Length: 157
Image (cartoon, rainbow, N blue to C red; front, top):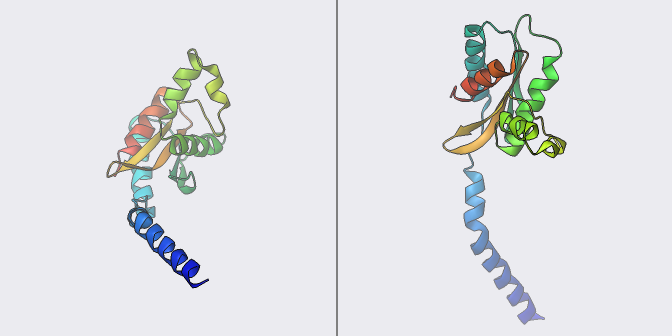
Protein backbone atom coordinates (compact mmCIF):
# COMPACT_ATOMS: atom_id res chain seq x y z
CA UNK A 1 0.00 0.00 0.00
CA UNK A 2 2.86 2.37 0.82
CA UNK A 3 4.57 1.82 -2.54
CA UNK A 4 1.27 2.60 -4.31
CA UNK A 5 0.98 5.82 -2.32
CA UNK A 6 4.55 6.78 -3.27
CA UNK A 7 3.92 5.98 -6.92
CA UNK A 8 0.82 8.17 -6.82
CA UNK A 9 2.78 11.05 -5.30
CA UNK A 10 5.47 10.75 -7.98
CA UNK A 11 2.82 10.63 -10.70
CA UNK A 12 1.24 13.80 -9.29
CA UNK A 13 4.64 15.49 -9.07
CA UNK A 14 5.39 14.50 -12.67
CA UNK A 15 2.04 15.84 -13.85
CA UNK A 16 2.68 19.14 -12.08
CA UNK A 17 6.08 19.44 -13.75
CA UNK A 18 4.55 18.76 -17.16
CA UNK A 19 1.66 21.19 -16.84
CA UNK A 20 3.33 24.05 -14.94
CA UNK A 21 4.32 25.88 -18.15
CA UNK A 22 0.68 25.80 -19.27
CA UNK A 23 -0.52 27.08 -15.92
CA UNK A 24 1.87 30.02 -16.00
CA UNK A 25 0.85 30.72 -19.59
CA UNK A 26 -2.80 30.92 -18.57
CA UNK A 27 -1.92 33.23 -15.69
CA UNK A 28 -0.27 35.72 -18.05
CA UNK A 29 -2.92 35.54 -20.77
CA UNK A 30 -3.67 38.91 -22.36
CA UNK A 31 -7.23 40.07 -21.81
CA UNK A 32 -9.34 42.93 -23.07
CA UNK A 33 -9.94 45.30 -20.15
CA UNK A 34 -12.96 47.56 -19.71
CA UNK A 35 -10.73 50.59 -20.35
CA UNK A 36 -9.67 48.99 -23.66
CA UNK A 37 -13.31 48.42 -24.60
CA UNK A 38 -14.01 52.12 -24.00
CA UNK A 39 -11.16 53.07 -26.36
CA UNK A 40 -12.52 50.73 -29.04
CA UNK A 41 -16.01 52.23 -28.73
CA UNK A 42 -14.55 55.75 -28.97
CA UNK A 43 -12.54 54.90 -32.10
CA UNK A 44 -15.65 53.39 -33.66
CA UNK A 45 -17.75 56.44 -32.83
CA UNK A 46 -15.14 58.73 -34.39
CA UNK A 47 -15.08 56.72 -37.62
CA UNK A 48 -18.89 56.54 -37.73
CA UNK A 49 -19.12 60.32 -37.27
CA UNK A 50 -16.58 60.86 -40.06
CA UNK A 51 -18.77 58.72 -42.34
CA UNK A 52 -21.95 60.49 -41.13
CA UNK A 53 -23.36 57.22 -39.80
CA UNK A 54 -25.31 56.55 -36.60
CA UNK A 55 -24.62 52.96 -35.57
CA UNK A 56 -24.57 50.48 -32.73
CA UNK A 57 -21.11 49.36 -31.60
CA UNK A 58 -20.51 46.32 -29.41
CA UNK A 59 -17.26 45.11 -27.86
CA UNK A 60 -16.94 41.54 -26.57
CA UNK A 61 -14.11 39.62 -24.94
CA UNK A 62 -12.55 36.49 -26.46
CA UNK A 63 -15.41 34.33 -25.16
CA UNK A 64 -18.01 36.55 -26.85
CA UNK A 65 -19.22 38.11 -23.59
CA UNK A 66 -20.34 41.72 -23.94
CA UNK A 67 -17.93 44.23 -22.37
CA UNK A 68 -19.24 47.51 -23.76
CA UNK A 69 -21.99 48.76 -26.04
CA UNK A 70 -23.21 52.05 -27.46
CA UNK A 71 -26.19 52.93 -29.60
CA UNK A 72 -25.36 56.28 -31.14
CA UNK A 73 -28.09 58.92 -31.33
CA UNK A 74 -30.48 58.15 -34.21
CA UNK A 75 -29.08 54.65 -34.78
CA UNK A 76 -31.78 52.19 -35.87
CA UNK A 77 -33.36 50.16 -33.07
CA UNK A 78 -32.81 46.94 -34.99
CA UNK A 79 -29.04 47.29 -34.93
CA UNK A 80 -28.63 46.48 -31.22
CA UNK A 81 -28.71 42.69 -31.40
CA UNK A 82 -27.00 42.60 -34.78
CA UNK A 83 -23.94 44.51 -33.51
CA UNK A 84 -23.60 42.19 -30.52
CA UNK A 85 -24.01 39.05 -32.63
CA UNK A 86 -21.43 40.26 -35.19
CA UNK A 87 -18.92 40.97 -32.41
CA UNK A 88 -19.57 37.57 -30.85
CA UNK A 89 -19.11 35.74 -34.18
CA UNK A 90 -15.87 37.61 -34.92
CA UNK A 91 -14.53 36.77 -31.44
CA UNK A 92 -15.50 33.11 -31.46
CA UNK A 93 -14.26 32.43 -35.00
CA UNK A 94 -11.37 34.96 -34.74
CA UNK A 95 -12.10 36.11 -38.27
CA UNK A 96 -13.75 39.24 -39.70
CA UNK A 97 -17.38 38.43 -40.43
CA UNK A 98 -17.07 39.97 -43.91
CA UNK A 99 -14.96 36.94 -44.89
CA UNK A 100 -17.84 34.64 -44.01
CA UNK A 101 -20.23 36.84 -45.97
CA UNK A 102 -17.97 36.49 -49.01
CA UNK A 103 -17.76 32.73 -48.55
CA UNK A 104 -21.54 32.41 -48.10
CA UNK A 105 -22.12 34.45 -51.26
CA UNK A 106 -19.56 32.34 -53.12
CA UNK A 107 -19.45 28.60 -53.27
CA UNK A 108 -19.94 27.94 -49.52
CA UNK A 109 -23.52 28.97 -48.64
CA UNK A 110 -23.61 26.38 -45.83
CA UNK A 111 -21.07 28.48 -43.87
CA UNK A 112 -24.03 30.58 -42.74
CA UNK A 113 -25.34 27.59 -40.77
CA UNK A 114 -22.35 27.42 -38.40
CA UNK A 115 -23.44 27.99 -34.78
CA UNK A 116 -23.22 31.67 -33.88
CA UNK A 117 -22.24 32.68 -37.41
CA UNK A 118 -23.32 36.07 -38.76
CA UNK A 119 -22.22 36.18 -42.41
CA UNK A 120 -22.46 39.97 -42.70
CA UNK A 121 -19.70 42.55 -42.62
CA UNK A 122 -19.15 44.59 -39.47
CA UNK A 123 -17.55 42.13 -37.05
CA UNK A 124 -13.78 42.45 -36.57
CA UNK A 125 -11.49 40.61 -34.14
CA UNK A 126 -9.35 42.67 -31.75
CA UNK A 127 -5.72 41.70 -31.18
CA UNK A 128 -3.52 42.82 -28.33
CA UNK A 129 0.17 41.89 -28.38
CA UNK A 130 -0.62 39.53 -31.26
CA UNK A 131 -3.26 37.60 -29.31
CA UNK A 132 -6.97 37.59 -30.18
CA UNK A 133 -8.63 39.15 -27.13
CA UNK A 134 -12.11 40.01 -28.36
CA UNK A 135 -13.98 41.69 -31.17
CA UNK A 136 -15.99 44.70 -32.27
CA UNK A 137 -19.38 44.49 -33.94
CA UNK A 138 -21.04 47.34 -35.84
CA UNK A 139 -24.53 47.56 -37.27
CA UNK A 140 -26.86 50.27 -38.53
CA UNK A 141 -25.15 51.57 -41.68
CA UNK A 142 -24.42 50.36 -45.20
CA UNK A 143 -22.28 47.23 -45.12
CA UNK A 144 -19.07 48.86 -46.43
CA UNK A 145 -19.36 51.53 -43.72
CA UNK A 146 -19.99 48.92 -41.02
CA UNK A 147 -16.82 47.12 -42.09
CA UNK A 148 -14.80 50.36 -42.12
CA UNK A 149 -16.10 51.37 -38.68
CA UNK A 150 -15.46 47.97 -37.10
CA UNK A 151 -11.95 47.85 -38.57
CA UNK A 152 -11.16 51.36 -37.30
CA UNK A 153 -12.55 50.49 -33.87
CA UNK A 154 -10.53 47.26 -33.67
CA UNK A 155 -7.37 49.30 -34.23
CA UNK A 156 -8.33 51.78 -31.50
CA UNK A 157 -5.95 50.49 -28.84
